[in-house]
Structure formats: C-alpha cells, structure tokens
Length: 373
Image (cartoon, rainbow, N blue to C red; front, side, top):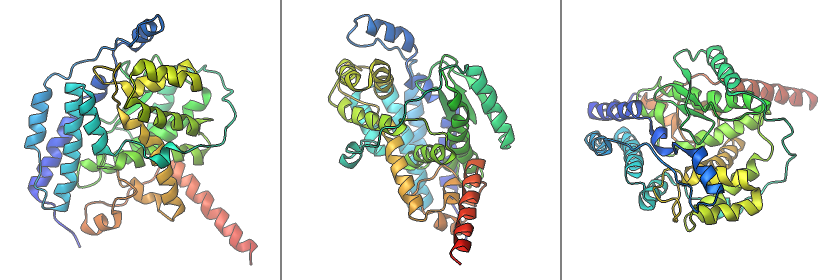
C-alpha cells in the first residue's frame, strides 16, 4: 500500500538537496596548505599552521536550512528533518571551527568509538610490496572508464587539490574528485573502482531513483554502512589493502585520544607506534577543520570505517540481503521492506562487484548441495 509523502516534506527535501548541490563542503573542511604546513611542522613549529577557505555565507545557509525544516509528524518528515539537522551541524562546525561545534557534529552522527571498537585487534598481514608508481592520471582514466562501463554516464571525474583523501565522491553533484598530488599503487586502481564507484557512486545514483533526494545524499546513520560496505566490497573482491584493519584500529584510537590531546601530542604518541608518515596522515584527517588543532578536539567521522565494516559484516552474516543496501544511501538499520510497501523506494541495480560475489556464492551452494546428495 502506497503512503503519500506530504508536499511540505518534499519541498524541504528538495531545498536541503539544493544546499548540498551548491556548497562544496570538502573545500572548507580540508586545509589549503597541507604540504607547507607539514614542512613547517617538521621544521619545528609546534602546531601545523593550517589555512582554510572560509565558508562565506554560512549564516545564510543556516537560515535556508532552518526554513527547510519539514513537519516531523510524518515518518518521511522525521527522516528529512534529521538530514537537515546533520547538514546544519556541519555548516555550523565549518563556520565556528571550534571543538564544541565539532563535538556536537560527532554526537549527532554517533561517531565516537565505543569501548568494544577501541579494544579491537586483527592479525598482522603481510607488508604491501607493490611500489608507489601509479600516476594520478592513470587512476582518473580508469575511474572514467569504469563509470562508462557501469552506465553512470552523468558522472564526472575531476582533479581537486584541496583534499585530505586521495579520492572523494560527491553524490549530490555526481562527481568523483581525485587529488592530482596523491600517490597510488597498482592495487589502488581496481580497489578505488570497487570502493568509490561500486559503493559510493552506485548507491548515490540508485538513491536518485527514489522518491526523496535524501536517499541520494545520505540518510541519518547511513555513513557507517556506506564506508563499511566499501571496506567489505574491497575484501570480497580481493582488493583490500594489506593491514587496513589494523590501520583503522589506530584511527579510532587516535580519535579517542584527540578528544584530550592537541595535534603535536597526538602526533608524537602515534609516531612511536605507526611511524611519522601514517601518524601525520591520521592527525590531519582527524584534526582537519578545527581552528585550533593544537588544542583538544576532533573531527571524528573516520571512526565509521571500522565500526561500519564490523556492523555490515555482522548484518550480512546474519542473512542480510545486500540488494537492500543498494536502494540508495541507507543504513543496515533502515526499514527497507516497509519503505518498499509505502512506495518510497524501489529495488535498484547492484554493481558488478556484488553481482560476481552473489553468483559465486550461489554456485558454491549448489555444488555443496550436489556433493551432499
């Protein structure tokens, strides 16, 4: 039975999506001068002197989001409202750049790692042997080819130097951003196709098929599933980087410590365990955006990779159908069957990564059944 979504909710959803289409938040979150800041930090400055592109018009954006608040007496209104709230908190964090504002963002997203996550450990894996010898243009070319192969013809791959990550997907704009100053290994080429396109781009594109735009940009609680599914996709396709799980353990522990440590103290603590290069990369990612990185405070979003991976694995092992995770940017906790009955979502295609995996799984099940006869 179809459940009509009220017009005020649809208008709020569209207004929120327009903000996401207009504002490139990563440009304001990531330092403009990472290389210079690292050089000065290594030369003895106690705190790296990060510079940021100010989010001009932040107050106007906040007012637009306030005006976009939907009535929440309808389930769809509550869903859209939570999305608006999350974006509002991000805008305020990028405007104020205080530890308090980033704390509110983390609390809303449920990003702080719990004791169970902090206690995780994994067996040591072999060291990555392939050299860092792949140029960014090779990655860009492969990503463009993969988009065409998958019929994602409205998507673009562009260069972007203001990034903490090497590759970033902006679903609301249908853009993959690649840092032209980044370094890559041979393994990264197909791993990025599996991770960035077969999860992030595919789920966003499928979300655009649904009734609400927020299925394209991301529902509340979907980020953990998003990044967790991306990690699991790397694993089932054989493209996961060696040691990635233990690196993510270091990330979540660093996030916990960053709540009470400044950049230098955290960097020194991490360097003793993981070396200076990885320590720098982790510190930049979890201290980025903050106006005073030398003081306690954290951008805690990166905890979702490990927590999401564990939750997605558990959900799949319990019989969860991965097809449900491809109706858009949803969570493993989302009531997909209910939304289907209400007419809010419809089943959408799954990418080659998961098609191959499910076909192989089905074949193994048939062979096992025949062998037992």
